Amino acid sequence: MTSSAVSVQDVTGGYHGDPVIHDVSWEVPHGSLAAIIGPNGGGKSTLLKSLVGLVKPWHGRVFLFGQEPEQGRKRVAYLPQAEEVDWQFPISVWDVVLQGRWLRKGLWGRLTREDLDKAESALTHFDINHLAKTQIGSLSGGQRQRVFLARAVAQEADLILLDEPNTGLDARAQHELADTLTRLKEEGRTIIVATHDLDCLTECFDQVLALKSTVVAHGSPRDVLTAEILTALFARHFPSLRETGEVVIHEP
Amino acid sequence: MNLDVLVEPFKFSFMIRAFIGTGLIAVIAAVVGTFVVLKGLAFMGDAIAHTAFTGSAIALLLGLNLYAGAMALALVTALGVVFLTRVSPVKNDTALAILFTGVFAVGIIVLSAMPGFAGDLNSLLLGSVMAIQTEEIYLIAAAALAIAFLMWVFFPRFVLVSFDPVGAEAAGFPVTLVQSILLVGVAAAIVISIQAVGVVLVVALLITPAATGSLVTRRVLPLMMVAACVGLFSAAAGLYISYYLAAPPGATIVVVATSVFAFTLILTRLRSWLRRRQGD
Image 1: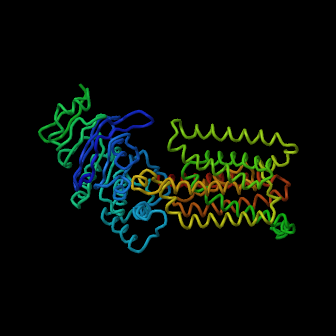
Image 2: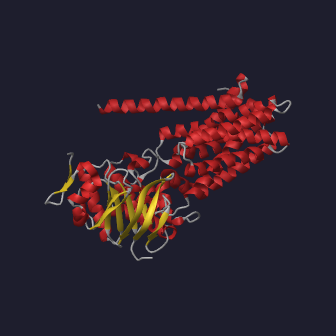
Image 3: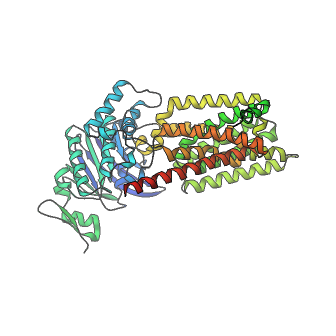
């Protein structure tokens, strides 16, 4: 057991008998902003899902806030990949954010005035009050991310997991998202992002896990984002780290 | 319009029962069908209807209550779907198709083994709304109350697990349990609706009114209300047309619902086209 926000111990898992991640161990301290990077199919999403029991580890253990996932995940908000969400679903921004409160109510609980106030406050937190009545699918990619993060705040989640949040976002929206995640971290939340986008890792993230089925490296961005590790991770795409901290991936 | 045209069918008690029973059924089916449409589960609805047919056939063979037999197999299918979605190594719709066609085939064999089955088969396949008895009205009303209660208690939870089941499960929400409760409601609505339109057309009562609602609103609750109104209108108009033209009532109700959908689709397309032209 550990007091880390997330503790992964020798986890192996996959789908329908095919292993995707092998013997992964990783610790994420409270209040940190961490990234899981790696190639497509490298197990980023599988690891993220293993943290909250969406994929059951074949062996190894996961602890959330020092508890078994069944107890700890009540403090977790998971933002799935954009293509996993039905954006045509007839639901407004307000109703999505309010779901953060319903998530805490279980099977029988009812909403109170306090729940409505907290949902309202989450809208204000992300400056999206004016979008409250808008159907979720009418929003831009960046706005959709903010709505889901507002739901996480309404849920009072201490750990927020994001699976490929930059997919479909333009450069400006990506930077706004990075700023938002930094702000959430400063408020004491732990954030873990699975991403294949290496932009801004060095400036925003506290630590990085390089995953290619198994752990290639983990540590601070400066320690992990070396030419050697990135080449091992992305094979023939040969990423490189510029003096500015920008990671560049180019074909040979 | 001559008021007698509206009033005349109510001179017959079987027509009064048909209006009450079909009206309740249409509303139940539309309310539950809203979630079937939102989740894209039309095929599953069809599967439940077909396996309910086999349940009725087995009940007929054993001399049991038809509704009980239909409900038993409908529940097995509905909960089997939840199980399949979690463990099946083949695609869900493939596994479901194998399951329900196999079970449906058993139903046909069971019925064909019984002498004088043709009448029962007909009413199961095509409905027998004019033959609704008072006791069946009570049963339908009880089902309507049960589904109203389910919606009152669980509506926001049904929306939650329909919109983002993955995020909900990740946060420890009892997604499987809530989905199972919803599917039990769907199974009950289908079993009750078979009386009105039969196995073949029951999916239309579930899907078409809710699909019509989805054309005119982008919120779940208003969509459900529009669906209920469309279902009620289709049931009433279908029964009137059926009465005066001596057409099969179940099929006529479905044709009315389909026409309302087509009419609404044309209107909404026309409105979008006019708005685009005004914007140019």
